[in-house]
Image: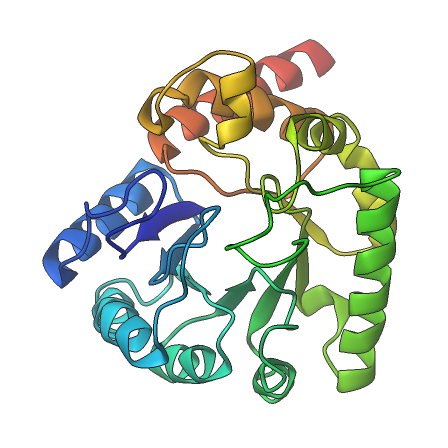
Length: 264
């Protein structure tokens, strides 16, 4: 999954793709580099961020979704939103997947939108708090067990709404209401999330927890991101959500080529 943020204040690529032309160019580049899914976001959810209006978010994402769908009819388009109306109009414009950081909890109409669109899947992500306050001293007794318990409840809720597990992707939410050691623990124990029976996604690309290992700006965390992708592969994670598609695709292809050679 390649990331394209159409917002001026995203933590890593804010302001780079704020016009339709630049956003589409980046989408096409990521697909050419090997992205299977393009995740389009119109609102930054970095720590401390303020929400944007539905009108502004729609203004940012809809033209990109429509043009990308016309240009690449087979690419999977994901929209990073927790607003049901943004999800509805994005689906009408050609989106296949809604990536909801709140697991459909911030907007009580989101579940109906997903349930009524049988060909659309949803990413349920774990967050403690909201983007504005999530990093104010988050605490866990056991982060992995608590996040799994959270997902068990959300998956059960989805099933009652008619959203089957084959339409659900879970994301443990690296950096969303987690301290450094929580993030490390989650990545170390990724295998445990398979017990939920859903597709699992890891979104650790360029995240700030890497600063505790090696100080670097977001754009200079490719090496750290590749390390998290390595753990994703070792733990059979289905999707990695990344900014640097070319480097991650090279890493993944090389990993599997070597692994297959060893097996043979």
